[in-house]
Length: 355
Image (cartoon, rainbow, N blue to C red; front, side):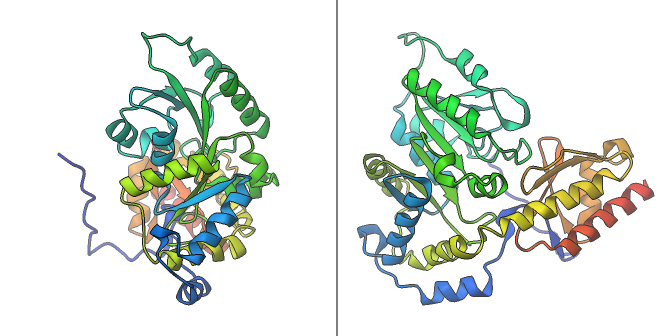
């Protein structure tokens, strides 16, 4: 049976504090105005000036020759692997990576690709783990074609791959004939937190992309960057996957507005995540992973409340969170204020006290 999301309970309280994901952000009034003013054309034939401007901006931001605008980050990942690989090829990625855990098996279904899951703490594998997973070219084993990292590591807790580790992985990949792909869904969270420029973080990676519909607050879209030859091939997969659009400048205008106004403010989300983690850690029995960016993972089991029960109890108070990998995930974003964080901690404290 195919998975169908459950219908929303009409009797459930209205959501007042939405920490489910940074994908829950709503376009600001200024972003909507920018979208309304956007100059548009047929994106599919290269005639949308706003889309073209966005692609040039992202290519420069990531230090690549060219970029292509995609409807979603998943399409960025799928198109990238389909360009890099041939059916039967092997991709290496962390066992919790989005391409394994959150993309519906697209890489196998559409490309006949095998993904080998690498282990490691906090959503990251070490260069040594990567090196040990490499094998000599042999007709008995699939060609190892791509190594992929997710910056930041979502299920790992929003952790940031260190630049030195990324560079070492790139060097190992090149020495062994593998292409490199960076899933940069929250790459700009990493750059804001570390002060390392996006082009430096993505240096050496053959393909990289950023998402606009998470912390940047746009309603749709991601942009994939790489060499001109790579982007030409990605465009063909965009066409095949139904990702080519018409007057997409309306969407691209939101992304440009986000790059102008919503990047530096990611630091506010990180500050709110730190505030939330600090408050939760002061509640006896609540185990909290210290956040590096805008994701806070915690477990209330030690306080006598299961994760599912906590999520349900908070939902009845109008607070929305997610269970992920056996823990509760709270995600801060531009629609979450410091006052909401204080209220959220208060609710958790009351639920634990009631238990």
